[in-house]
Length: 166
Image 1: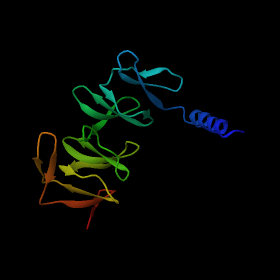
Image 2: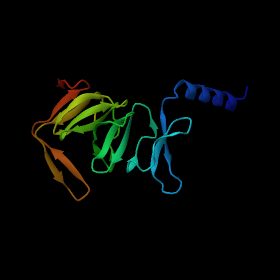
Image 3: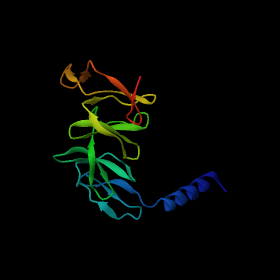
């Protein structure tokens, strides 16, 4: 068999084994985004959300909802949490986690969208090499209209379970 045919058969097989996910689509006229299942049926109509960041919606998706901002939703479209905004978009996954917000506190979710560390921090840096810098006593400094940073006299490191380290 030719390599291209083998790849196509493997792709079709993988799609059939995992046919419960949704794909992001764009309306040809308006450019609005939504989601369809693998049969092409519209599941979330284009334009329902201001923007759909997640291209393949398996367990959760990150979308922008008017009046709420960037949020994580499950397949029933229940809001799971707000997503921490970084560089005009959703926080990027770093070391397997991304930052989320609940009740104005920051925590972490994993790449499947599960909350791993409950939001309890006023400021929290991305994970790197298994640890993250967090604090509950932060000051925000703006160097200009677009750039800001946190400062604290009480930083501490937490591991991927939320336990204090060092």
